[in-house]
Image: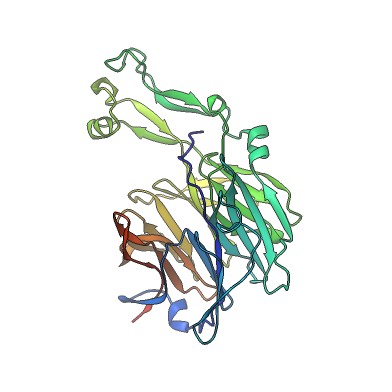
Length: 361
C-alpha cells in the first residue's frame, strides 16, 4: 500500500453556468472535433463535473459563482477551502445521476484523511447531507493486507549494496493517509470513491456509511532491460516477474450504469452490483483519466501526452489531443469536456487553467 507524497491546501470552487446543451456534443464522434475554451482562470483544476446547467470544479481558490453578467461574487462554502482549512485539498467532485446532489471529495489534515461530503444542489444551506471518512475504514480493514507486491523469484539477485529486490505486502505498509482522487454516482443513491493509496474502490451508501466495495488486482509485469534501468534495478532482475500496485485514480459511471476504473495505465470494467473488476484489453501509456459518454462511448485521456482516444464497440481510435490536460468529463447529454492545468516558468504563470468544451465540427 505505497503512499503518495503529501500535497497540502486546496479547495472547492463551484461555478454555476448557464450551459446550452447541443445535440452535436451527444453524437458519436466521427469527424475532427472542435475545442472551445469555455472558462479561463488563474489556477488549475484538480477535478470538475458537468451536469444540468452547472459546473463544479475543485481548485485551491475561494469559491465563486458565475453571474449572468460575467462578474463574480464570493460565496461561503464550509469545506474544503484554502481560506478556512489551510490543510484541506479538494480532489474530486461529481453530480448524482439526476443532478440533484453533488459529491465533494477532499483530504484534510497534516497526514490527509479522505472524506466525501454530499450536498443538495440548489439548497439554501451549504451544510452537507452527510459526510463519510475513509481513514478509519482503511486502517481497520486494509483491503490488500494479504496481497503480495514486488518481485517473484530472484532471491539470489540483489543490488550492489547487498539489498534484496523489493517485495512487500499490503499488511506491511503503514497507513498514514488516503489518496482519494475520484468519485462517481452509483446504484441506489450510493457513491463510489477511488483511493490510489489503498488500491481500493470504496462505496458510500445513501446514508453516508462507507464500506469496501472492490479491491483492484495487482498488475503483472515482465521486467525488461529498459524497465530495470528506469527503476534502478540490477541487471539480474531482467526476465523476472514483478507485481505492481494498481493505484486506481479514476472511477466513472455512465448514464447506462456501466462503471469503469482507470488504474495506472490500465482500464477496467467494474460490476456496480458485485464489485467484480475485469481488465479491458486496451493498451495505453502512463496515468489515465476517463469519461463515459452516451451509446457506449468511453473517452480515455493519456495525461502525459494529452491524447484523448475514444473506445466504441471495443475499438480504440485517437480523437483529439489537448496539451497539459488534467481531467476529462462528460455532461448528461454525453458532451465531452476537459480541464487544462496552469503552466509556469519558475514562479511566473505562462498559461492559465481552462475548462474546454469539445464537440463535433
